[in-house]
Length: 114
View 1 (cartoon, rainbow, N blue to C red):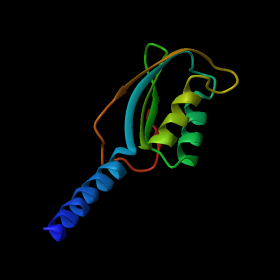
View 2 (cartoon, one colour):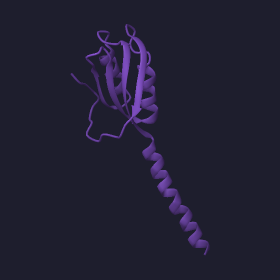
View 3 (cartoon, one colour):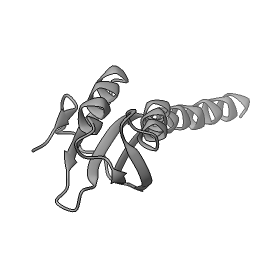
View 4 (tube, helix red, strand yellow):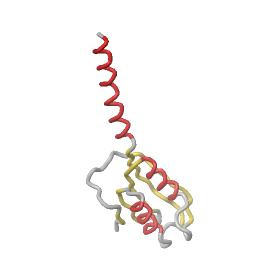
């Protein structure tokens, strides 16, 4: 009986570790509003995203905002979102709206979409 209790405890731990590893990945889509076009926002966003090892994209929107999708480790995504609230030196960010989305496995290197 003792052996079966130890076995069931170790079986419970394996899925938790696996779930913990999976939950460290985040996918977030968002929109940045303010003076964010014509100030190197997309290029700066891409540079930081690549340095953090994130995948996804960033693009200008017709209404003057910038849309993005970032995927990666939780801490790296959080760092990217913190930066997005400030942007590059010439930008004026009025707000960042974000939504958690499903992981998209087909994304490669972080890119600027046109």
